[in-house]
Length: 353
Ligand code: COI
Image (tube, rainbow, N blue to C red; front, side, top):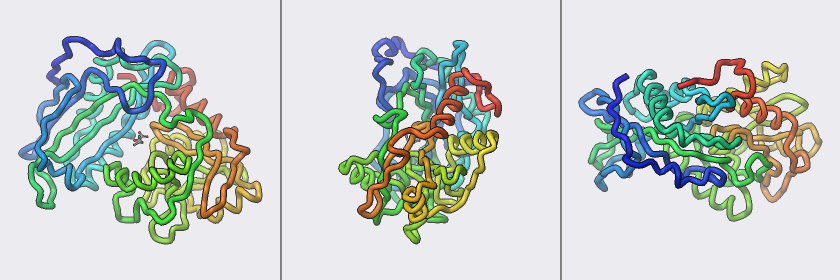
């Protein structure tokens, strides 16, 4: 693939304290960029990460016609670079594009862009276990027009940056509260697309939760306020009577790549997997009667995030004595083991750029 490349004069990588990374604050030297106009994507280019010029009339700022992805590259044990399931992320990005009326980018261009960018900025991939290079592809409408209609022009930007754990708790139990009167998504809406609007909907309830000492909210369905959907930054899994239970993909939740990896691993290990609706009442009663032994979130940024406490309608429920459960631990070890090239990549998840 032909990518015009303009490199930085001086890398900023030496300014980075790789031992004290957070999530989403630091960006690598370069970004990949491609524009869409007159019915076609332009020749891709890699340029120094930096400002883009926009007008206040940019349609995306008003109506949110944008989609994004989040995937990770790891410094493997053998010194190589492992990108985790990029094909699956590209596939999801294409679905998101479809829902938001954004012209698709072909898989080869996407993969070629990610590979070239990660290789060029490979010094930015942390060597610390638990840290990685987060890759954030973004497509947004670029027309200067404030009538409501589908844009005719777009920009695709892929940026990367070194990250540590998403939650300040790291791989330790987090506290979650249910979403109360707030709603994230309904069937037929945008819930299964990775688009800005879903995250906009989550901000206020997320802030309320944080003020009360909770990391995030558990979204209940938008119709009955009864069924568990997801956590917004991650999907959610329950261990009940030894089976792994997780809400089905019915249009309101994001089809998580880590969710898919967890289900494949659990099935491979002979664990019963139930993709079914699970109500908050069932969660409450089975935590109380002891049949629900673990709850954990799954996500690219969050990896596996044990849930130690859930607050729902005035009641605080503690799970597994606020300790990481054995399945969450096993999944975390296996997935990160594969990502860092320490464990056998049984399912061909790792891509080498
Ligand atoms: C991810 O897990 O990659 C996400 O996109 C979640 C959040 C950081 C938006």
